[in-house]
Image (cartoon, rainbow, N blue to C red; front, top):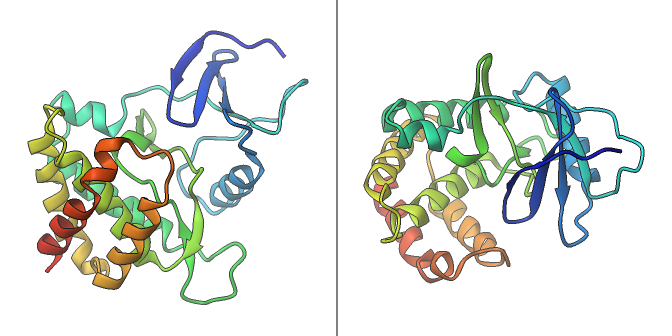
Length: 226
């Protein structure tokens, strides 16, 4: 398999060009991509907007995913450029969460469970020409939708409380708008927020700042949702 240039790196994976249509997402630290592949295949068949999955290439590793090469900014980039307002961004995030939670679970027998992303924030939404696509399904699980809503709000609150981030104020506006939007979908109950906070706190990939402000971020979400 010929791997092209590095296109980007995140906390857990690197993305390389394969050709004009496909990219290779390769996880570091031996993370197996099989679970993510199964969930994305299921979501794609259910009509949810994820990148198309490509066939494994010769020489592929268990840490690899071959994905559609998407063009367009992330929702975060669009908001920073002023092309998308906080209200519009909140509307899109709320809609994507709602559509995701309308899909029955793949494995769970609990009728209240749904597929959860658990990391759905503006950097994981790409505004492709034919519509938004949700990426990075490493943290996916099955459970109550309120947990997913709480996690998205908690992540945004952590960013809003980062004094080094120049766009902290617009993120606060996005968070406030998202909490209002989610109110009609069941909101962010205290129990779900507590569970999301505990789950987030166990994430070894958190930065020092994210860990420091976790409690303050949870309190901010609780205040807005109260």
